[in-house]
Length: 279
Image 1: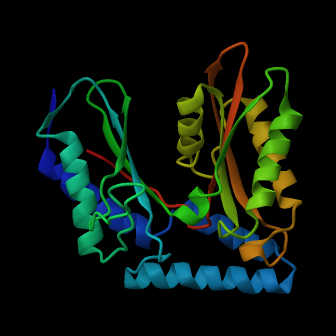
Image 2: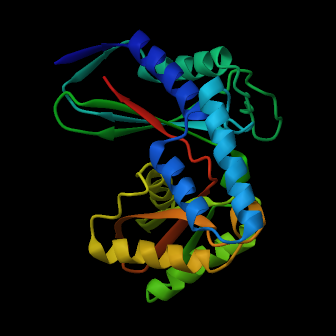
């Protein structure tokens, strides 16, 4: 049995919140660099250069890459042979509170969706716990701003619909979003499950590194097809046109009811943030 003190979880989450907001993941940085090298439209190249410089300065000076330091989703992947000495949920939220205060990160969470009173420490986090084997314990912290979150969509397609309709739904969602989610974007797509699970799948898809495609070749090919079609829109970096509207597409699936075909599209900005640690 692995024993983990709640205080260690708090410390880890605090550090991950700061790291996620100041040091962009390697795969996202590489994709932006690749987009810059491939771009021929000068306004898009200049925009990507500015993005690259912003990422560099943020890392060097430990400053937020984006002023919207987001709502915090925390994923706990935990085996049955792990025992937490303390309150896991409190430990995570204490970590978010400490990280956002210590890191001088913008606090955007309001306690009530209509009365709009700020919680003043960016809590609560949205916590998901997934089962694992043995004494495995991993924390993933993924802050996400609302500029891109506002453009996410969920739709129940007809069960007789297929790839074409799914691709059309994703492309239409991106087209409607335009420059609002700060492209070049990353797209997570959930297919299957039910109302709540398909939305979760689309968010979970954003945790996968861009260089890792779906393990099923059928869906890996669908990811490539969606990305190609989205990039044909020509929205480009920050809406200035160009080759790259989308840096990557990830699809996650679940079994579903014979009478349903739920699809969720989760749009994330070019500052797609995620950091993880194993304890």
